[in-house]
Amino acid sequence: MSRKTRLKLNRLKFNLRRYVFSGRYFVRNALIVMILATVVSIGVVGISLLKTEKQEEAEAAEAAETTGEITVLHVDEPSMIADISRTELDKIIKDEQKVEVSAKEAVVLAQTKYDMTGKFIATEDAVNIRTTASEDGNIVGRLYKGGSGEVLEAGKEWTKIKSGDVTGYVATQYIVTDLAASEKVEELRGAIATATAQNVCIRAEGDGEADILYLAAQGEKFIVNKDRNVAGWYGVRLDDGTYGYISTEFATIEDAFSTAVSVDRIDSVKAAKEEIADKVLAGKEEAGKEEEEKAEESEETQSESDEKTAEVKEEKQPEKQEEKKEEKTEEKKIEETTEKQESEEVKEEKKEEEKEEQQEEPVEAEASDLYLLAAIVYCEAGAEPYDGQLAVANVVLNRLRTGKWGSTLESVIYAPYQFTGCQMSSFKTALKTGGTSSCLKAAQEALNGNNNVPGYLYFRPYKNVALDKLNDYQIIGTHVYYRN
Image (cartoon, rainbow, N blue to C red; front, side, top):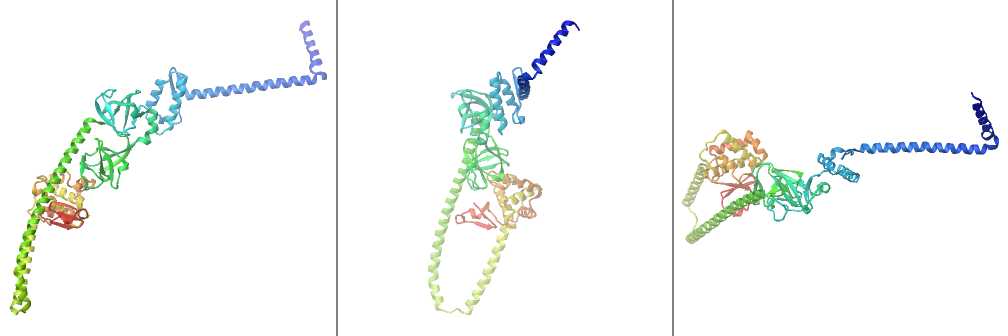
């Protein structure tokens, strides 16, 4: 060690003894130590805070990973955001402000139950769909309130949409889209009824005897108006905008959006309804004419019977007076006894004649026809007594003999607006089994010619019929059978 270095070390030791470890400067030294300790503590705290900030930044980076201009957002339940949502967000994110706003909207979508991004819902009724974005554009379809579809081109005044088979423009003020639509789903989504059989009757009222407005094909769908529902019937809206009722027995219902209806579809429904209305009107006019003819015939018959009754009364009056004065002789008693015997014989002959009338010519039929007849008997009178089942089978065959409803058993049973039993789901099963043994027996006997309702062409629950308006009828079980 050099002499100069030794001198510096000796001077340092001297200064330490004098100024640091000397008792004269104890307070000052303590203060210096406290200051140094405080500085060190502040440094430690600063370093920990810095680490916390870096950790938060790392977590934020995980929540929003940015690569170029595309930002991928992470939410608690990503499955609740459709792929189209992510695509749309990727397109609109260009700066931090838009990233922040879009992220908030994405979180709202994730918290809602439905995602209608890129879709719309109609908020008004009977919204026209046009070929161009103008009121001068031709109408190609119609949307009813709650109808939905895809947004093809969004605009302030007009929006191009696709719903069902219809594509065109609608006024933007009549629809909601994207997030606004997502928030309105539960308010605007309705119910759809689907026909489960062929030729299901849509009636004017919720009553099986109400006028038929339209015949629905199997699988055809209708908007349900829940305010119009009644027991056993759904209130539905037809594609032309009118209302009717479909039996709950022949329809299923589910919550769903309706789709647009094309103009061609609207026209076809109107034409079908007009055709049915014409047939119903023609039937009513024909029935009215028949009732008038019957009324005229009954009046003529009544007047003739009144005249005959009056003549008989005039002839019998003097005879009655003489009979009151004279006592009956034994000869008269014998005559009366003979007359009674003869009247009993006449009654028996009449009964035999009636039995002969009831026996019809057998109808040639195959096994499939037997099961077809038994199936309709099962669906129309399965719960009726055997005589009622036989009567239903004979009504079908009576119609076949007239030829008015067709020349085959199948054409008679499937004739429009006639036997509702063939629309039941149980009808298909009964075609294979015959329904029950009693229904099969009734069908076989009717085909063999045993007719307990000769000439009768109609039957209905007797509680729903004004019996005083029928001239010739017969009640069996819960049904009344009549000619016309």
